[in-house]
Length: 450
Ligand SMILES: [Zn+2]
Image: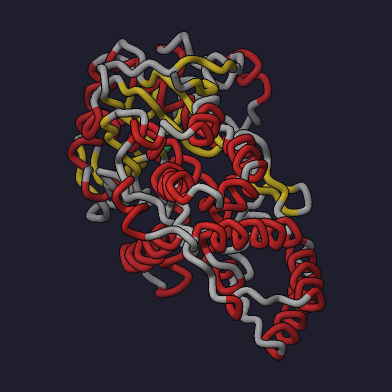
């Protein structure tokens, strides 16, 4: 039986779905305003493994992941690029296309639903209207706020005390709000722009979309809600407030969060400027190596990004690819979906035991590598294990051509030095290093300030 850490209880819990054999899972998606980075890659690989594992365990999983395709960051970028905020959609389209390419490269299964916020304005507006009717939200001059005091359980996920939050909130008092902690559900915009609502023209706040979309696609009470650890507060806390205040029932039974990717012990973040995009890293490493690298770290712990680590992962992954290249394809293919057959092999049972223990991929690879020397002796078991790794862990195990992965230690040192320069905002130095790298045939493409 699957055990998983629930942020709500802070404990590892046995997983029990609301309906037998069916699971509903909502994972917060990206704001498509620039390249997806290796932090995003980690989130969606982690939840992809969870999705695959649940499917392997016999659940029919309905997976929903949104696109926040209207947001200040998108509007600012459109203003910057085109001098016209209303062209935000062009940026969103391009970023979503690239994101899909990145997800495909990482072998992440497409969610069943991938809604865009801008396609669901009626549902979002209706959700807000109901909150106002229930006295959980109020309108002031075309803006609508959620009233925190109307939801006494506020803070239960992030373990924040409302009194402490209030005391700690910067006192830039907004005279329109009843409480400094109240957050925006709808933001008023000039006449004629964005969407028409009962409160005039405007656009939704960030948090409301996930409450509305989860309800629309998965129902008012779902099994799993997930995302990166940075979403616990305020985003997920606010989602809980909106959904539970309205529906008067638990929003999600399991809240699952994965740790950050850090560079030089700082969280990778666009505002700090230490972002490494997936497209950039894929120029140097096969995406499957990156997937393997993520899964060689416990999903809940912070991952301190390191090229040395990735190189080590690359070596181990290539070792696996070579070993499994001995398999007969037909034999492997015949095994796909044969859950019971696969579990007849003791090694697979052992690997699965680790996976169902809070997705312990590190332990799972541990037992695999312990058996690596004897595994080749049984072609049947070898093929079954290959199939298991493909189906549940999502590794394609195709041998990587050597020439795409040769980065010398000298190049590595330059790349490392450049990341450091970027983290310290030494842009001129970073550019110099990029030129040196490109002379060596290593392409790096990233942007300075987004
Ligand atoms: Zn969300």
